[in-house]
Image: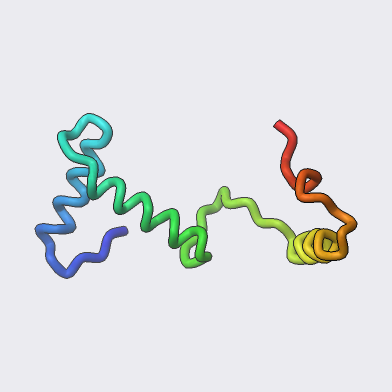
Length: 79
């Protein structure tokens, strides 16, 4: 969803996104992508496939890390 008080601008954003990656320009696609990513990181919008870690597991990991019982390398996922 795009909110734009100027209808022409909204149409321009939609057209550029629709033409991506084969369009002549991608500045609005880049800006839109960065905005959506920031909104998701800030918890302002959610996606059904977002990973949700339990609050308890996060609290335990942070406490163990702060107490020196957990190394940062142990928190990384193995590839």
